[in-house]
Length: 144
Image (cartoon, rainbow, N blue to C red; front, side, top):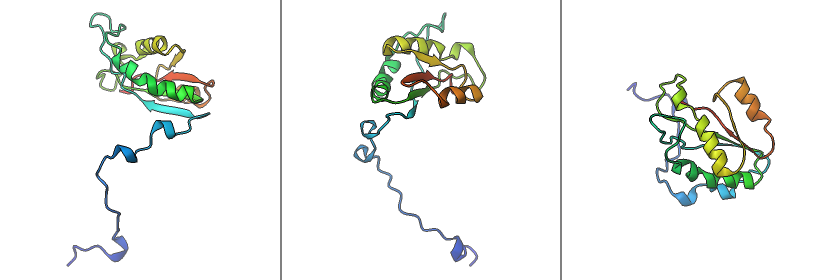
């Protein structure tokens, strides 16, 4: 009838399990991060002061990521590279949406230095992330 594909085009796929059972998910505590570079997508889309966007008015989202970041660093991760978006800059660089102030706040809350990279792609970012100092924290510029 023409609607059937030839036998060599037919694929048998296992049924898709659409349940989101947390018990079947790998937990961070069961992952060996010692000596590894760990990339974490965090939610640092924090509220900023309207008159001075370099001031963060609520650090709850940064504080929410601290246990994960600390766990990785305390477990011997070579580095933790953090990436987030902030605001809606529509794909162009907008200074008021820079994550640089977040890096300063994160440094205070974490009690460890954070290297802020002024971009999220490119050779400089790749080089900085490829050979970081042991135990380093790196925050990439706004993903958006």
